[in-house]
Image 1 (cartoon, rainbow, N blue to C red):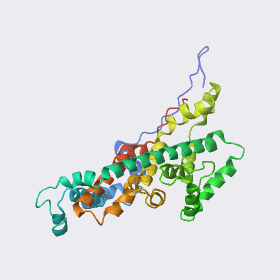
Image 2: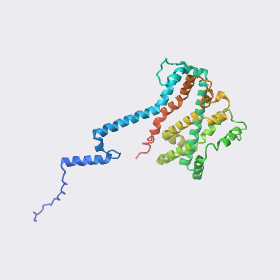
Image 3: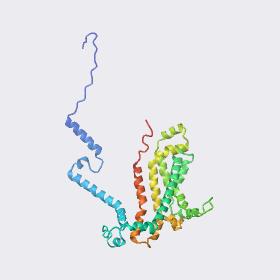
Image 4: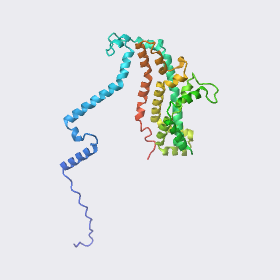
Length: 327
């Protein structure tokens, strides 16, 4: 091919791929959508069938209703019995207040049965146990995960090995230690410290918090050290604010465990005036009217329910440290 002098050959652009027709593109997108969502027992095509859609929808509603009844049914029934006269509970327990509401059950349980005193004792025991467990779990997990001492793996193995020892085996040695603790010179029996101190020795909480600290971004720790933060400042200002989800989980475990604990407070708190609800309620059952006793049980369930409702969002709050590291 000859060209004129001075002319420049322009490179030819590559040919564009043929564009598939619109029906083919729609079919391809539909196929990709079905491939991306078809991960369950039923495919997207099955869900388009009215019989399958209505059948599975009805099944979901029934299962949800059964779950609500199984979860909330006992608490709602207890709340009803708490304000129902004793004769109605014995004769027609499932009737809805056939002879009116007995609000005086709550008043008699709170004042006459002295549930107010036992309730306050339980709150103090749960608060001290919570503080003890949070202190030991956070400092122990921080030392093993962030500070990482030379013999940290040995200490971690020793802490983990205590989880394989049954609690019943440790009951007698622990009681003898509380009865005559070293260096104190006085017994801790009939003292809240006899419950608070052993509650802090929870290997499960230490390992749980350590695993959470292992997933925290190390870049934040290095940046804090470069800025001059020491171990205590790093723990208080960096690690703890980033650990709200695990602190909420440990708090729920600690409060509920302390609230329902029966055997250990029964052994170390022999004075009835300082015993918690978990110990006193079985003791007063035989000498208390049924309606009043159920009212006392309803009062005893208030704090665990409130604690769970308050901290339930922290179970799912896994992105509390999102955005801590940029770029």
